[in-house]
Length: 194
Image (cartoon, rainbow, N blue to C red):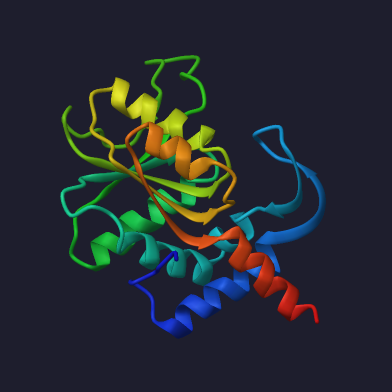
């Protein structure tokens, strides 16, 4: 079962409620993976709200490896997450930088894939994600970081849709930690709508 040790049970319930009411929708949707689904999760209404980001960042920070010097993620979904976790780390007297992985190399200037204060090659970086379906977005970020010479062992996501992402992470020798599973959020949303 996903855990959020950085949160109290009340805070975890608050975050679940926010996700179920503001991020989750039921209908017919085409996902970023190209798959069709009756469940849609867009965490941005929660991750871009002050309290939502605070709850997410606190929970994610508790799963960032002790030796990590930075958190990183693929733009756009991970942008608030990496910033929020870096700030939460600072408030907890933990020095973590935030890195944003571009979807494509910058078309001008340095042509960079990565934005932020770059650590030394060989440094450990934890990848953050809003939603994992097949794991494609997370793996794109991981691959860019590994190609740049960084070590990535863990991906932390707000929601695991339980559609193969965990297996894809395992195949890439990554540990996937999810704060919530889609089945939890959809069940909670169904209870709220009764």
